Image (cartoon, rainbow, N blue to C red; front, side, top):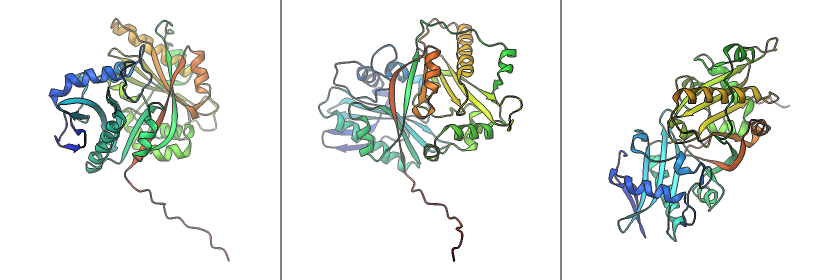
Length: 355
């Protein structure tokens, strides 16, 4: 499960790496954490209960584990009562906490804090540069992470389009071409990097540090850009498209927008992520993305459809209004937090001399 089997012992139990023999208990713990009336504490992503609970989005089938995944559990008197799950991006030395549960215990908050501390200590030893987490601002979630040294840097709306609304017909190649929409290619990294920085406030861009090399990885299947729901993309077939500048633009290399779609392979919603340059109408990209999802899902014919989920950061407004026009409704707001293990140092610079 992990490379180590160490534990962090303390009063009232211990935090240790999970074992294969824990899987059954962890699956039940994850399910109970999303049920109402259990006294559970979870990250609350994106909301508890049907139709799209965390257990649906971030469930724990053994086949979904990757070599980079880590699981920590809290054990007391032979009973597993806490779970923390981490996904690691080895290329960027980043860890993302995607699940943090404690069920039916009076000291659930303390147990979750101890698991976070154990994760941070282990991550620092393994060379993690940044820790990410997204959570609902309930049950002391935000306060817990800020006490552990995380900084709050943004909020994200989780928008959901139910399966009862039919998906639009996909655009034809000619219609997509007339709108300037085409698949992302291996040479688009610089243009995507510039688009991301045009959309994202400078303080957020400095924290997330998406480099041109990361957008080059995107062309080879890496999951960019980051969102609170990025972990569900491992259960989806992901495609990315961009919208080029219209004819006659001052800068023909400038992109108008970007859309990423994830067509679900498991029992979960499809995924839509849109970035548009300020002042650009996002409607064509949303319409195009929904059409792609509809065409791919129909071809797969997997027999279940749980709608489409779309994360939108609050600074990307009015994108949420364009999503509402396409049938989406905001079902949750989550907080984005991050902790760095490196100390930022100001870059040296030349200053003009004053006489």
